[in-house]
Image (cartoon, rainbow, N blue to C red; front, side, top):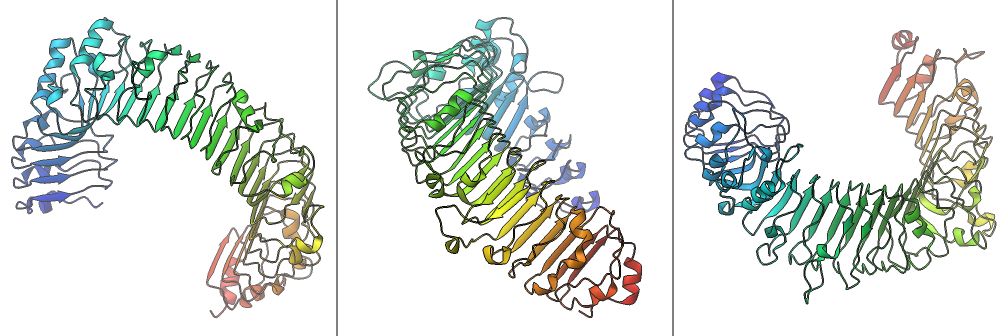
Length: 611
């Protein structure tokens, strides 16, 4: 955004509406305070905005001010002096201090709309002071955030009384962070009072030793519980008093995180969480034992940093579509459970840091499964229980294997449209499965041979592939690309080679004729043998990128290695020699870039293609 000069703003004295939303402005100019007729000022989503002018109170006709989603903005007290202000959206009020708000200032602010954050609540002394905020009268506030900074409470009972007085109106989304009491007030679990509460977040309430009874809140859809350091159990109290309605009847998303002492989750077994679709448990290192058994609506399950959590069977997840496990080895064993995945699982199944995972039981995985990513599961092997035919029958959209050091039978890798294999150090031979559309492979060590072909059960004549992109990087022992690439990769459009220092030449049969993009980066021996590339036959080639390390020797004889005239974009970096004749033949060239090319001046003097 261009910052106006003071003189320009002064000339806009009749301006009534000013929208600066979603700009990168850091500070409003002081001269804006002379716009006495301004009625609406919109500053929403100005992520860089840090302060407002001190004379804002001069905007005597300002009726609407939107400062929502301005996380860096410090809310000045003088905004309370805007006499005509009727709507203030997105206020973040800091209590206490010489420039902070008082509870009586908040009580007089009847113009608050949208989201409201009240910070530094530890500065409130007692219940009587909290009453002055008149929170029940803030009927237009839709989302309320109450935050205490990290400090020890002098009196837990006083803290509870203060929060009791900050009870909002009934139609609210609420977030409570840093509350210093040991118990929550009764209104937080009052299902008749908070009958319209949809979203609730409890975070960093470090002294609380129990959770409020939230199970009977009829409209609650989103619940997040984080940083509750003293919670050791989620007890039956969490579900609320017995009722004809199932506990958490409307809840769709539930998150537990950063609860280091949580050990047990008590399960009622009465059909709780019937509508739950998304469950996430993160960084709960002592959690073990039971898990809700019949989550019939659950579509997404994420378990991370829970090394002791052992999900006991039977567990019904008939609607599950996405499953992620990270650093939770006992939960990762679920991957092996035949009964678990008779579901609609189709989304990304992501398993990280689970050394208990030893096999990929393809015979039990649902046919709907489309994406699998497995990272750092060092004991995983891909031997099928009976035969490789089971894996050959699988076809995924995405398969990613990264840091799985025990994989050695690459012929058993399931087929996928997009196949990514990285840092599997025991793989020395790799067969590209039939049907692969894009392949990214990267090894720091060991890969010596790369095959393109098919499984033994499929006839050679039937293994034509639809691969369009092949990316090979960091394969320092790979000495050659597969033979018969023209025949086996007829649809290949992009070939990218990165840091494959031992590859000396392209296959004798040449590269696929339909290749449109070729990138060769830091492949020393291959670049030094560029006279033998025979790229002039690739009449579909449009883009060529060569990035060297400057270590090449001058080619014996001359530099007249031929390129096809179809090339439109050419980038060459760190080559010692390049013939002007080579460039003059590129009649379709539209873009040329060079980097650290000693001959560039002489090339320009000798002339480039007429195009």
